Image (cartoon, rainbow, N blue to C red; front, side, top):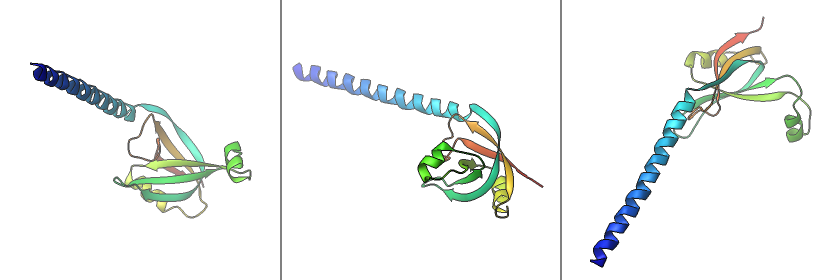
Length: 135
């Protein structure tokens, strides 16, 4: 009788822990999925694209960096020099990616972006959707 009671208690504890784990994981997945579709902001940034890469361990994503003009205390502290800011961004649209790759060196551009609350597998929450060249 005592062994049956112990087995029953073990089963209840196991099911309780499994339920807590499933609810936590499920809630996290729902929150991340919801945050992926929650637009935080949108706008544009001007500068020169100086780095483009396709990276990722399991899912390859298009990533880039834009050198913007202006003062950045954070950049000065890191590099010991005053200078512009670096802005990291992601690209999902292959046509936008091709346009970025075709830019001549040191071309000044305006990148229009949307910032998402969370962006899943991309490196940043900033998704560039339009490239505007300055004449």
